[in-house]
Amino acid sequence: MPYLNGNGAHGRSEIGRERVLSAALDVFNRYGFDSATMRQIADQLGVTDAALYHYFPSKRAMLAAILDEAWEVRLPPGAAELPCIDSEESLLLILDTVLHGLADHEEAVRIVARQAMVSAEALEVRRARSARWRDYIVAHFSPGIGKEDRRRIMGAIGYFIAGVLFVNQQRPGGLRAAMADPRYVEQMHRMAVLAIPIRRLLEGRPG
Amino acid sequence: MGVRSARSEQTRERILGAAKELFAVHGYKSVGVREIGRRAGLTNAALYYYFPSKRALYDAMLVLPDVADLQAHSRVAGRDQVHEIIFDWIDHRGDDSEVVSMVIAGVWHGDPEAISTLAQLQQAFLGVLRPALERHCGPEWELVARTILTSISGLVMQLTVEYGPRYIDKLRTPAGRQVIREILELALLDAPSVSVSGS
Image (cartoon, rainbow over all chains, first blue to last red; front, side):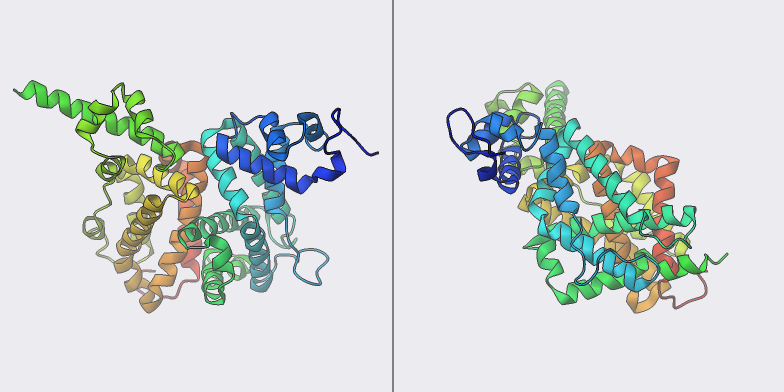
C-alpha cells in the first residue's frame, strides 16, 4: 500500500532501503552511533522520521541491517549454495567469497568497527552478527569433520579473515584493492592454507 | 628543587594517561587537544607547555618494541621457540596495550599516523620471528611469519574492538593463551621445514 506522510513528502517506495542505510551510516559516522538520532537520519534524507520507521524500527535495527549486508555472501557464479568445506579448493572459495563481500562493503565495515569501540550497543549488534556468520560457515563444514575440529577450523578461519581485512587497511584502497590484485590473492591463498591446514585436519591430526 | 620536577613529571604522566585513554578508543585523529586537557584537568596553555602539539603527545607515548632484545631469546631453532617469542611478547609488552588499541582504533579511522605505526609494529613482529622461523622453515620463513602475523592481527583486532586496551588481559587468560597456541600450531603444521632439530 502506498504511503504518504503528513506533509506529502517522500513516501515509502520513494526513499528506498538502500538510501536509508547509507544515510544512517553517514550519520553514525558523523555523530557516533550513541548520539545519532532517527531524526538526524530523516533530515539527511529530507523526509519525516515517521517515514523511516516504515523501514526500520530503530537505529539499532539499521546497524544490524548494515552488518547483514556487509556479511552477505555473494555466491560464486553458477553456485546455488556455498560448497561444503571439505578440501583446500572449497575452503579458498569460501574465503574469497566472504572477503569479496567484506570488500564490497568496506566503508560500512570500518564504520561499524569504529562505533563498536565506543558504543556498547553497537558492539552488541556486531557481536550478534559475527555469531550468526560463524554459525553460517560452520553449517558448511563437511559432516565428516568432528565437533572439536569444527571449532578449531572455525577459529582459524575467523582470525584469518579478520586479519586479512585489518592488515589491508594499510594499503591504499584497502581490502578492495587487495582483492583486485591477483598477486595478493595468490599470496593470501598460500597463507590461508598454512593458517587453516584443512587437509591435515581432515586426515586427523598426527600425534 | 626536586619537588617541582617531580610534580611536573606527574603532570606529564597525567596528560599522557589521559591522551592514551582517549586515543585508545577514538583513534588519534578524532580526539582534540582540548578534550585531552579537559580529561587531565588542565588548560590548553598548560598542556601546550608540556607538549607543543598533539603529534608530540603521540610520539611520546609510542615506544616501539626493541627487536634486538626480543630476538635475543630466539637462539634455538624450532616451533617451541616461536611460541616462546610470542608469549614473551604478550607477557612483557603488555604496557603497550593502550598504544596497540590506539593504533587499531586509528587504523579504522584511517589515521595516517596509526597506519604508519601499524606498519612499524608489523616490521618489528616479522623481525622478531625471523631468526627462529628462518632456521625452521628456510627461505619460506616470511610467508609463515606473515601468516602468523595475519591471524594474530585478526585476533588482537577483534579483541580490541570488544575490550579496548583490556584485550591484553584476555590474551593472558588460559583461554586466550590456548587460542594463540592453536593459531601457531596450525600455522606451523604444514609449514615448510628444513631441519629436524626443531621437531
